[in-house]
Length: 497
Image 1 (tube, rainbow, N blue to C red):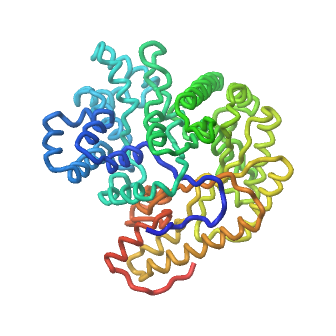
Image 2 (image 1 turned 30 degrees about the vertical axis):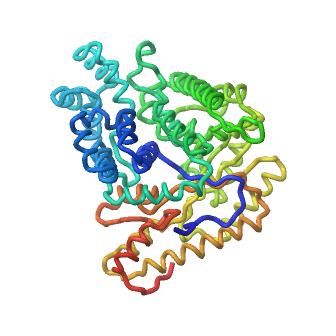
Image 3 (image 1 turned 90 degrees about the vertical axis):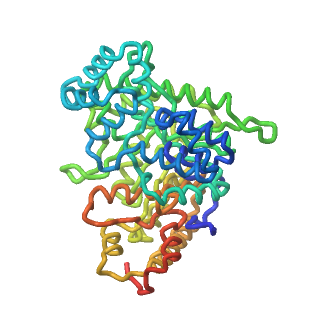
């Protein structure tokens, strides 16, 4: 296997993004013995309740290789499709948490979606299940119900094998299980059920540690919190965030105290970077044609509030750990200016907190060289004037929404080879621009590691159900190209972007 679509740029670390589901599936393909498989099933709360001892014996009788594929499929079957109705997802979660089918039906038909429905569901389960309710609440929090990144696709096993075979090309893993909606247990009671449960983060970090990788921990202030914060006041939201930040920073520091590598007689922590802020600035413009602070507009959380929330992170900062402010679409000048303005506001309130600006660089084939060149010119000035490090945090390059429909339209005869050849030229061009800019990168992380696990198609496929969209050709490793070269099913006609 070649090096895929790596940027030809120097950085002291090279990483890839791994969801908790990807880590679990990697653990399966890495099993070498029957005992490895048994150990995985026992420790994985996603599926250990679904496989009886007799069923596990039956699976193991197939031999290790076949048994791994059966366990892999069992994991896939525990999830519902990405575009399933939310009620289906909740039913799946409740049943896999130990709630009976009858009670799950009652909950979704009579309690879900009503005022204070979390409290009402909690009270119902406590009343029906007594002492077993605590176990149900924990299982429900730890169970992942809805698939993402094409995890249910039958060909994903081969993608995970390929990633495993190329894992040594990455010295860093971006672990995404520290986000507040993955950690905050909505059924917490402050007594028997903890507010913050780092189960998935522990599993993912331990996988990185077992494989000699350092970790960038992603991410503390993150959008998509509507389920947690809807109906709550600014004061309540600020309190939750403050307690979450304190719990997370304590978790990170304690993990690093007990998990480290010895390098030249020095302890090197597993977690060497943390995305404190992720996508504060809006993707769209307001009625005045300007980008805006999402947290202030949605929840009333001001920059002064953010100062209060993150002061603990500054006070407890480990000098060996970088803190990042991570944003996409910095190739757009107006949005980049708003991000730089937001960074200045953070620096004014909490000087020394953010040492690194993360640029995600989710590029389409249409992203122009000039926009990238202007972006890196601005990064160079940021480094020279303010001493900030710059890191590429989520790089991939893919077809955009319109091109993907064009490519996979059944009426078009477009060569897959030509698409990937063009992608290679664009990656080479981007690499050259970065090298000539003089920007010193502190790291590069790749987002979509294969075409099968492609975060770009994840967004598009929900919006374009009339199309059969297998990929956005966004993977670091071109598994769609490999598959179609084997199939030999497409011709060699060219295409223009």
